[in-house]
Length: 233
Image 1: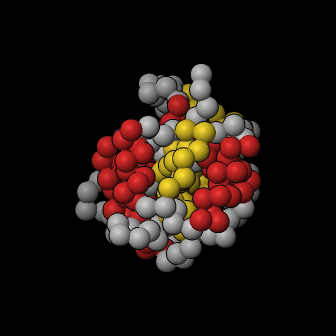
Image 2 (image 1 turned 90 degrees about the vertical axis):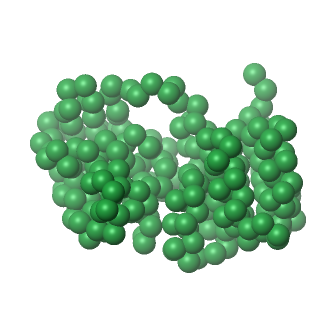
Image 3 (image 1 turned 120 degrees about the vertical axis):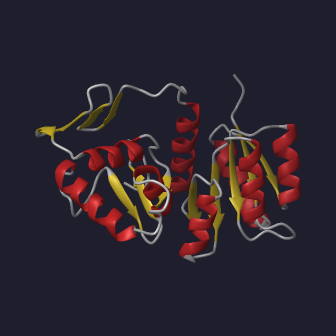
């Protein structure tokens, strides 16, 4: 089996050189380009296992490229950007990005997030009947949840929220997306209600609710269910 192909789309030469070197040393095959147009051409002719995409690109910005990539495939897209505006991150995630890293970034963190994204993409399509994360066990067939202290009693809404999060380990899920999935269309702006249910869930499943291990907050954006080697944990 050949090396996994990582496509880097970033107009900063120093970033392209850094990622080509760092990823190449870890055994990945790397293509690094400076424009979105080049990136789309590469993605069409040599499909990557994952894409690292800068938002601040010349001509077509990263949002447009993200939308086009997602329309063509389910390839993991990791946003790499110097932009700090939370709404821009939300916009990129809603367009189909899987994760984001803010510049300046640590190479080890980026590599860990790539591993999480690739593992998620390579997971069999069939939904597992049992989800395990450290001491937390979610039995989907029996609709039972347990942690180190034994069975955890959840309300139907709490259970639906937890299983929705756990079905996308390591992925940033926006407030609006979670609300639409769990509560349905028309509830996308009820963020305070979501916060309340997340707080309730943490009190029931976390050993230290104030320092959550499983459900991590992405401030101003949403939540992430922690994968076993998620670098955010």
